[in-house]
Image (tube, rainbow, N blue to C red; front, side):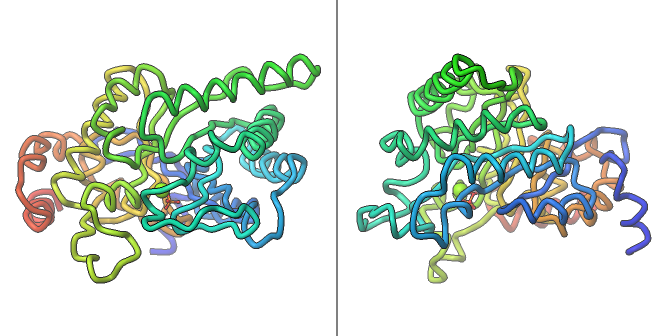
Length: 322
Ligand code: PEP
Ligand code: MG
């Protein structure tokens, strides 16, 4: 096993029938990059920037952020790095921000909702990212997008900061892709409309599942409803991938589901382009994908999407595909 992994470490990821996908890592800090590289990651698919803001008594400065983003980009060289802008609220609290106590924090004032209302927090992060962009292959991603207006507003602020920096004579990369997390059902449903405006999608199944099933991802009492293979989830995922491809864009996934050996064949068959997971899952996933025929799974796509329960999906996939 270890030997196979060592062999595959520096190889691209191909299926048995010669289709290529990208296996990338989720990170929380610049120190995590080493793990991604040592485990054969082809890039970073989700940099959760919250950790820069957590465990502190005040906001990180633009400079601190710039150094962190630059470090990640430099370590990854020309490999893609998807950085997610601040996703506070929900389960992630920041004591110094004095966020309101809410009845339903997961349905409340979090992530992009907070950032669009607090430009004094949002703009320094965007400036830090733009300044760091010249050191690698940066892609910027907004979390918790529920409406097109939110995306447009966030992108306008980003472009505004880019203009300012250029006027100040500071270099900014001109090919930064700007995409969104798809983790709210409204966005997954109208992915087609979004696909005309975004450069890419990354499906956040951790949240997408909880919002679709109306089952709090932290509540054990309802964890039986937290079903990654539920046909509703698979149909939403499929909708997002098809929408992306119809507009020539790419679709990735950065929720836990992307590294799950049961989900991987299904996602491959649905045409997912990029799988972002914890570093230690990358080589097992590459090993698994090498043995799978994308074409064969894709030919069962209609059937899989028409099944009625998560159990039926799992049984079908186990019986037919493996
Ligand atoms: C997700 O929701 O799937 C995701 C990747 O983001 P987080 O787990 O940070 O909410
Ligand atoms: Mg999320």
